[in-house]
Length: 111
Length: 112
Image 1 (cartoon, rainbow over the protein chains, first blue to last red):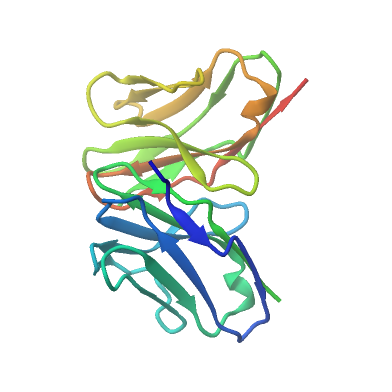
Image 2: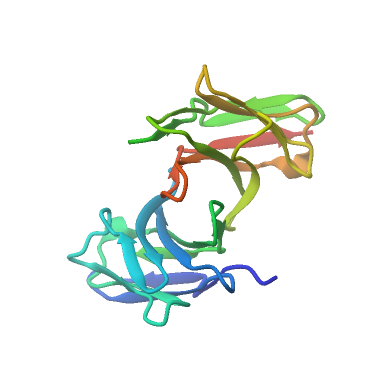
């Protein structure tokens, strides 16, 4: 069974630029999550989708972050414009029941 | 609201020594508990989980954790560690299908 796929693996941008990350969940998993993991901390949930609907986006900085899952399968997370403090690893996870499975993450560096 | 406390940010041990990584949680409802491991430059891999039933759960690579409801703990143990166990370990809690809340992680450093 293929795992959660994410791309790109690494991205370096300058502040005020925009960036997008892509995630393809495990086949058949209805729930998809995006997490932000700042160096030295545990992952923090940004947004949770159930199929193509948003379940929880309470911690998503909506002035600069957006995410979509239009067909209920893969998802895109966008940051526009990026700030220095957005430097982090962005993890995508999916689940069908109570256990979440994570992708390799996208490491973002904002200069 | 739920929270997870991992008191130790780093745990250095020698190879073949036993280790315990501590995790305490707080939640007002019944919980599911998880340990994830993160190797350098990789995503999180599920190590083991407690959903219900036996309070002692084991992983395929020799780790085990015990759910202690009275002490609200889910400590991770291994009787003999290997160099390859060097990684960051995250404890996490959820209540049913809710989101995961993670601790800050414990870096396990195994030296020869």
